[in-house]
Image 1: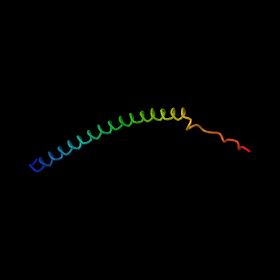
Image 2: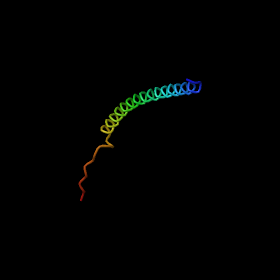
Image 3: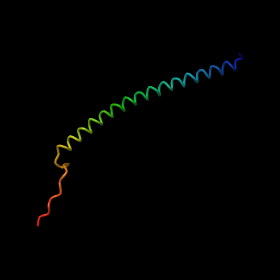
Image 4: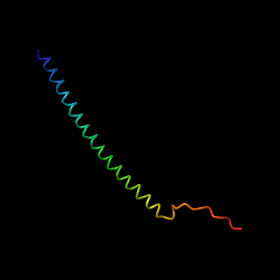
Length: 71
């Protein structure tokens, strides 16, 4: 193997290692985002239930039946 081939081989090895590190970083970020997403979904469910309970308890959001016309 001549020096040019050895240099090219080392360059390719370095590039592969850099790409592996980048992939590891991206995989880690994806896992973090998935966890954050699950937490946010859970919080949204809790908030949605809270809002539904508030609306059910408030007369402002209660449906009203049409009133009969007075003559």
